[in-house]
Image (cartoon, rainbow, N blue to C red; front, top):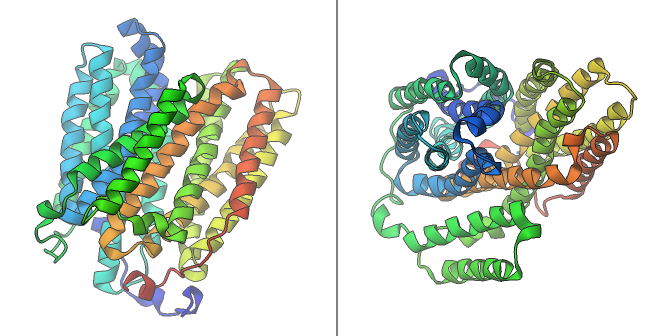
Length: 465
């Protein structure tokens, strides 16, 4: 049966609205606070008399979230995703309170690391919980639910700088954490009351005995090493690169040796999953280059922060609209069709950047249209990659697969952070912005060329196998 041949899908019961709302609420605190803090960096630098190290207030959270996503996903497979989600929210709440009263930069960075570990849980656990619920109810795949969560996250990221600017002018940067606390509390209450508790399964019987603690530590160190290499590749001596290769060799050796490895080799060996992780990292590298690069270029051209925020708002609106359409397209045509559309849109977005920035004067109307165009690949590729992962992952590894997808996103984020200084967008030159456009177009072209060797249709039968 093909996805578009199932005419009964839309007649089946939908996912519970309360559960879907609770899971969507969980992704707001991290997305909102991180993007809001981006505008607070100068104030934090001034208060603590810090130099370039202040960038670690943001980077440390990306690193921790990238590492924590795979860990929380796998722990959810073993101990229950609802339980792991609640623990993650509690951990983030405690750390957020500590960040709000941070006496120094080191304390703040440490708190942000713990926040990243806690807020790494919502997305992989939500994907696994949605899959469990669709299996239990025998309804259509979780693509509609993934659309709601993706839109919620994107809207939070987009409005974050605006909210951060308002809070900064109201009561300083600490107020960003003060506002985040009730959001975390509300998410915890919503999950506890609206997300059904999971039943004990054979896999979770003796979960502590099955937990591969050395493997978990090796996976965490490997992902951390990979992100640090991307961030600081030119400045690292050859001994660090040799150590990184040794780390990878250790991961491979332990994974083959362990009776129940923390990261199952089948997840990486699966051609659909492995390609999806690579494509997700590449897409988010391009996305974050746009999201941070265009405002950086406009600021260098003396455009005010308010106007920059308004120019970027269509990105959220178009992402929301595209994600909703993409979720329906996944059910009818399959995730690969949506990924192809998104890849093509990313190529066209890069070319459009080259055209818009080539004008001698800043064309605000063209920039608004450009921001809206950026939302098309964002909506399509986020939904398509999540649907591919949910479709292809075995039920017992649904959380780990979702965690790897999330980790791939943050590998893309740190790649973008490493590339931004190389492009020189902070100088405001037309050549730099044109270079950004060509890089984005190149990523879109690569994504169009990458195709899975086999395709799985996102159907009820595939999800419930």
